[in-house]
Amino acid sequence: MESGAEYDVLANRACQGDGALVGYRTRLRNSGQSTVELVCGLFVLVPLVLVLFDLAVIVIGVQVNDQTCRQAARAAASGDPSSATQRAQSVVARANQQGSSMLSNFTLITPLGFNPGSVITDAANLVPYGGTVSGTVTVQTEVDIHPFIVPYVYSGGAPLKFRSSQTFPFTHVVRNTAS
Image 1 (cartoon, rainbow, N blue to C red):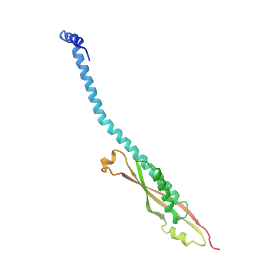
Image 2 (spheres, rainbow, N blue to C red):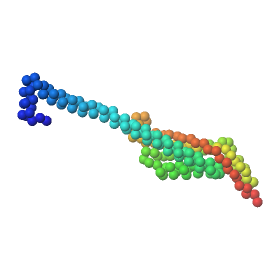
Image 3 (cartoon, rainbow, N blue to C red):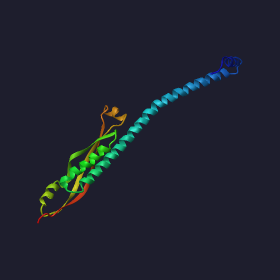
Image 4 (cartoon, rainbow, N blue to C red):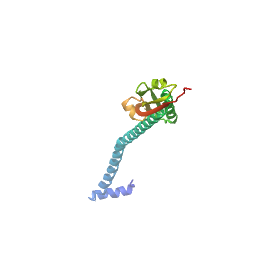
């Protein structure tokens, strides 16, 4: 800020028509206007950045759930159809152990879907002589995602739930146990 003597000089110039005092006031007014514009811009920018961060968390969470579901479906398709649920559940349990504070409660939706639906009984009927059982297995997983801002806007603070479904083919050979 200007000292008293400098202010008097500026006031004398203003009286003489120099306009220096008017320019000083204009600079102060422009500085205040810039500060108001900055604050208003931040009121728009900060929530926008937080929402973009939340959307990134949601996208990453959905991708992690898809990967978990795909791994669970591969595990379920890689052996005896009667123990497919246990293999898929172990993959989901591992995802729960590795989860973060924003992703939690990976859940395996049971029962698993087999096509044809009689795959498990067909495999049991092939004992003791053995044979081949083929089909597809469908696994569904669900995850709770906890972003910062978005859940309070849409669901009152409850976590967002996303579900994924993956189908894999399998062929299982029942061993010949006849003696």
